[in-house]
Amino acid sequence: MSEIAKCCLTFPPYTLNNEEEKVHKKIQIRIKSEQLTFSIGNIKCRNQAVIYFKFYGFDYHNTLITEYTSERWLITSNYEQEYETFNLTFVKGKDYRDLDNCYMEIYTLGIDSENPLYFNRLQLNNGELEDYHTPNEEIINTNIGFNKNRYINLYDEDNILQVIRPNHEDISTEQLTSSQKTILAPHLPNESKWDDPVAIFYEFMYMTEQKIGVEK
Image (tube, rainbow, N blue to C red):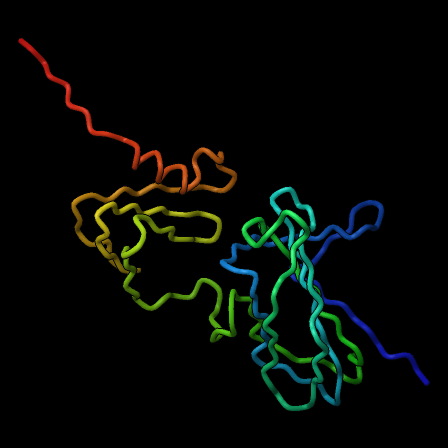
C-alpha cells in the first residue's frame, strides 16, 4: 500500500537561512477576543483528500504564546466552503491582548499530481464566520458613534489615525463632520509606548487650557 502524500502550505511563505532552517515570516494581528474563525470560501480536489490547519501566535518579542490545530476537513470534487471557529489558549500570564503576530500552516493528505487541490477566498477573522472581503477593498460608508468612548482608531495596514472627540459627536467612514473639538493623532509602526493611542488620549484629557495675560 503506497504512502499517502502529505504537503504543508505556510502563510505567509517561509524562507531558508544558511543552515537550511525555516525562517517564518509573520503577519501582524490584533484581535478583540480569544475566538477566531479561519475559512476557505471555495475548495475542491479531483477525487478526495483531507486537510487541516495550524495557527501559531507570538507576542511582541516573537515568543510563541499560543497555537491551535484544527479538526480534519474532508475535501471532495465539488466546490464547498470550509471553516472552523476556535478559541485560542495562551501560555500562563498571556492573553489575546498580548498577541502581536502570527503565521498559519495548511496540511494536505492525499493531494498529489493526480489529485490536485483548488481553493480560493482564504480568510482569518475575529469572532464567528463573516462574509469574505478582499484585502483593502472599499468599505461601505458606515456611521461611527462615540456613545461610550471618546476616541477611535482608523487602521490603514500598520498605520493608525486616532480620532479624539471629547464631546461624543459621531463621524462616518467617509466624512469627518463638524464638532466643538476634534483631535487627529497619527500613529506609526514601532512608535514608543508613550505615544500609543491610550497614552495620547490620557495626555489630552489631563491637559488644561491656560490663559496668559499681557500687561502694557
